[in-house]
Length: 186
Length: 355
Image 1 (cartoon, rainbow over the protein chains, first blue to last red):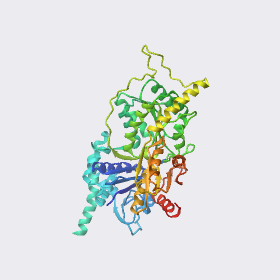
Image 2 (tube, rainbow over the protein chains, first blue to last red):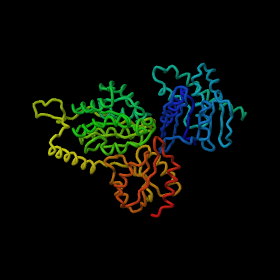
Image 3 (cartoon, rainbow over the protein chains, first blue to last red):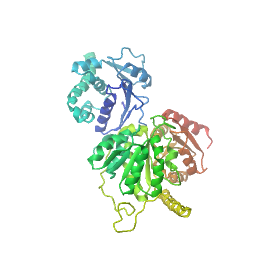
Image 4 (cartoon, rainbow over the protein chains, first blue to last red):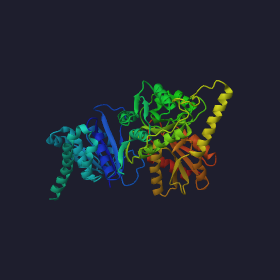
């Protein structure tokens, strides 16, 4: 059972919004949820991260210092948080921007070239939701349907036209590992 | 009712609107600025006034003016801004006017940083400004509690004609949690015989903060003190968490209390008899919580866990009054207590200290 996720990348990738999307989905599922952003003196292009906890029990500390799942959108974030993931945890790596392999053997690591997939969808900016879709598929922390339903909450009315694109991104991320699993099995 | 996901800072704003507050005056400072952002949008929707003042001094004096005219008014800031407001807060307390002030604490002293701390405890609970006065101080520890308590804050302010301070920290302000919105109060302000809103043929209404004759000033101080005694007797609020059978009782508020709940759960899973008293009113400090828990005789020690070098511990010691030893664990300057470190401290006390 996955309860705590750390989403990390660089400012501008949509990390905080992706975390909010996950938090809204958890809320719609009727779970206890906390979303905590890094809100230090951040700058554009610097690191950005947020911790999301989704649980059926009340959440005591909202701080995600030892995540069960890490979503690493670039190399500095991976280097910063790789060691914090719990043993037997999961790391989903955006291999478009991370050109190394993880040395740890006690965690499950999944690589997805999200920026390449995002370009195939026609917009590089949705890479974050491709990785989020993958993370949701791999952890089952919420259902993909609820994440899709939550898109309307995260995007302000003036950006409603982006919902369809991000819906495709979430699905593409989920399908990526679904296909991979089926190929292996088949 | 479906739950909505909201930031702590926004919940203060929405809660104030739902409590009938229609005047907000403030000046931006991290980590509370979302509160002002939110009300800048929301206040005009309900016909209220949002005003970004030129400084914190101006903000608090605008609150003073609006409250004096009988309005439900509030301001918010973080440590450095709250320090600037102290003169005005002292005046409002002297004039016996209701208002709500939110302090989302940040690292100090000085300009410090914007990380979460609890080091404005002394400032909040000892009055803060000059003169012999007290604020009612409420310390929520979740987004749900923010929206529930700010409503109570306005009620208490009006019941006792006294400023109420809500004390949070950067983490509480920035985090999002699902919460249930409480119903909107009818926007009704009862007749205020003290407000400087026109005498309507009645007696003169004077809002005064100058008592130049010591005999009169002493009478006024006595009157205020009688009010504070009444608040101390009637308004203590706290939550007991797993205190039954506890030998070691943690004492923590706000974010530190959230972390301590995790500590208690962890310890109880390991069979360690640990509980938590979470003060919700920091002034009046919930002395009754300690009296009732000490009457059970199971408690050997208290451990005050704070995001400061030790401020609330003085109130814990006054409440325990020598009946049991009181220990301290803290992190400072914007660092948060880590669950495993607090557990270590708990184990050390339970295993090494003679009861």
